[in-house]
Image (cartoon, rainbow, N blue to C red; front, side, top):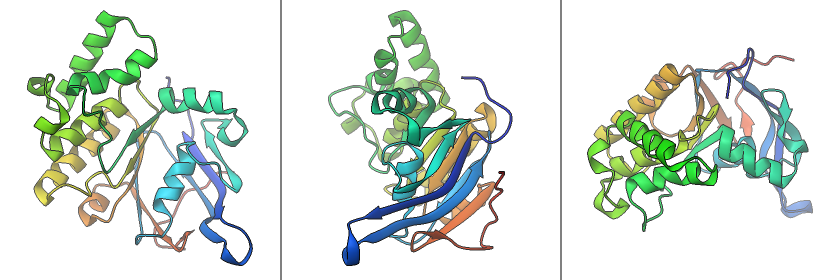
Length: 237
């Protein structure tokens, strides 16, 4: 998909409330910020601060109670579920803390899944998968299953799969949470490199200070709200 001028994603007044009445929990409260092409934004905050809930709304996995998310100029809150499925598959890449790989498939087959769903011809799929595995340093591991790979290698497969359809936005939820320090640093360099080289916009939730050092911007959440003045967010009306 072509890269448009202006923010690739805009969050406006995002609020997510779980439950009703006195027992309700406001997981995210009136969150607004912009995300630009080629920008790496880290969202930090304690467990329960709303980070994962925020990513769920940005990725069109969970509808906000109020507010809106714009991908380029498209209001995701006004799309049908069928439309959202295609948007998630084609324009948004997801990287998960637990890797999210299918254990019965090889590394190459895991990366190939989004391309099969898109109906890409076999020869084109093979070339794309080979290119993606090379980009994350796993050319020699294409035939291995997740159980035969280290945690860092599994996360590399996850990143390659997330990039399979050239998304405009990459969302990563604690992507280094299950990795040792050295492997986590390598993974953070890989994510930062993808953002810089491919112009993908990325939002990463993390507790890792080293990830924050690689970020263009850090947003801090506390009890579901952005902390004022902690990391200024550029908001364009």
